[in-house]
Length: 542
Image (cartoon, rainbow, N blue to C red; front, side, top):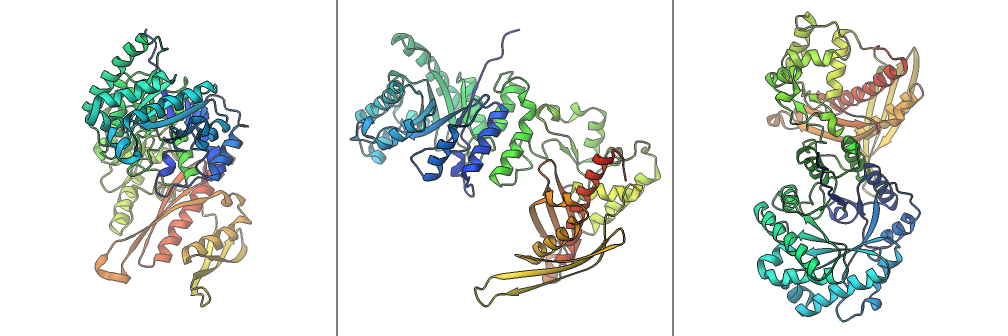
């Protein structure tokens, strides 16, 4: 059997990804991201420009002390400034001072960018590229060249675009990456152009007695084609792919590396990660989302929570018989899991799958199955939605089949709010009285809103009895108005997403009172965590 073709992976989460709206990494975040990507087995980590801001400068100082098992960190910067010699350019000096073995340099490959944006001559731009690469290579660095706007440049002036690549090659570059910087290229064009470039440079290197130069691809998602264009480039012969593991970045983002890697390894028979690491893809992506403090798109291919989710009763029935019926790969091959979404269109097969977690003796003909189906349909008619509230659905099933026991009893809760006359900021307070094993606890909490205050008070009351409540973190809070015609008297549905860093779950509450709806979802969230921890500790059901 022929050896799988190796594709080098360069992740730009810390550089291109950091340009995405709402993304802001602390120095410690950057360190954690490097460690997470290294654990997965990413080859190169493009970590930013050490001359761009004090935070990146501090990161590179700390990064020198990191002990990485697989990944190599690359500093990123531009070619020398016009009218400066490389040794006079402060930015190039900062790249050397970062002391990374690898340096990525970008330069213009589109004549329009050279004459109208850089305001220099086409010949000077070629010299800027060649001299910059030569300067850094002479200092012992492995230099990678990003040909910015290459595909637009090819369309406008193909000969000049190729000359920019030749300039980098003659400067002793290790790899050349073709960049679809505006994200406007079409897949078939990318395939055709990359094929021509790869073939051209094989001959160019032989002609000039150069070592083989790796050709790479860097795409943006402005047309929704970043992943497709990356795959087309690989089909065209490139052996290095750039992107961001979660796909975020400037404008509409970059090629999503989690999708690219899974496609190449599982669909194309190529090798992107070290042996056995592809099964860590889902956990890696979710860890990165936590660090970036963003909600992971549930519909993201391979790694999203809905990537292997089934809702329709007929689909669920087929998948329980043979997953191949509706799944293109086994979920566990990327470290994900199959999910059955509970709703009014789900059939008995789903109910059975859910109940088997708690009672393996229940069959399709058991009366309790009909009871659960009827209860779900009634609650969904009342405004509940269980397909996105796995935690609340599991608690509902437990209550019906007798595998549930409440961890506390509520006596009352009370909330109030006020607006400070001093600074105009709103503040809320909550008081709560609960009972655990005949012991009463009364506490109060303060928060930015009534739900936040109630959450604070409830945690404070419960932590005395259940210290692991402190591990729960609310990652998202959504409110949906169900009856728009009733205005402020409308019924609302509240969804709360929670995490304890090991597992994520979602709970739901419905009421005409938004505080009560929030309370119902909040209680389910905490009880879900407590039940799971109880079962892990005692290895049995309640």
